[in-house]
Length: 317
Image (cartoon, rainbow, N blue to C red):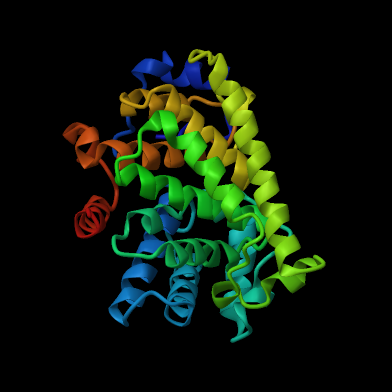
C-alpha cells in the first residue's frame, strides 16, 4: 500500500491517489523491501524451529543465510535501506561474527519493519520472543533503540493475537519496557553491547529502552486529541528510525482499531517512510482482527500471496 507513496509528501500523494480514505491497493500489489525481509525472517524462523526449540545457535545462521540471499536477489530493487545493504554485504564477505558486520549506531526502521513473524509464532517463551526479536535486528541494526523497538513490535503483535484490547496496548507496552529496561539478552546477542562502547550491557539496554519510552510518550500525547485527517507523521515521527516507525504504526492502528483498511490507508498517506509505517500498521491490525480483516479483492493481488498466507496459516495459534 505504501509502495507508490514512499518519498512523497501528503499533497503529492493526494494529487496522485485521490482522497486518502478511498486509496486502493495497487494492481498488482508488489511488496517492498519491508515484506521481502519479513519473509526472510519468517523463513529463518521456520528453519530454526525445524532444528528444535528456538535458540540463537539455530536462528542466527538461518537469519544470516536468508539476509544474504535477499541481498543477492535480483528482486532486491525495492528501495532497500542502506544499513541493511551494507550489513548484508559484510555478512556475505566472510565468516566474521555477525556482531562485527552490523552497524552498532544504526536504529533505522529496517530493524523492526520485518519482525512481525516473531509475534505470530505460537509456543515461544517471553525470553525466546524477546531474544530472537533483538537478534534479528542486531544482524543489521545494532543500536539499542533498534533492538528495543524490535522487541516492542514483536510483543505488540503477540499480545494483540492473544486478545489484548487496543485501548490497553500503550499501557502494556510501557509496562513491558519498564520491566525490561536494563535486561540484556546475552544468550542471544553475545558481546554486541561492547561495539557501542557503553559502560555495561545494562547501560546499553537502558539507552535503547529509554529512547522507546520517549516515543511511547509522544504516541500517548498524540492519542489524547488525535486528528485523523492530519498527516500522522507530524504527531509521532516520520518513521525512518525504529522507534518512530513503531510509534507511527501504532498511532495509525489505534486511530482506527476496527477499520483496518482505513488504518493502512492513513499510514500510506503520510509524509514519512510510508511503506514501513503502513507495514507495521497492517501487522498490528492483522494481529488484532485476523486474516479475515483483509478483503479478498486485495489479498488476491498480493505478490508472494501463497507464501504469505502459508506462514499465516501455519502460525495462526
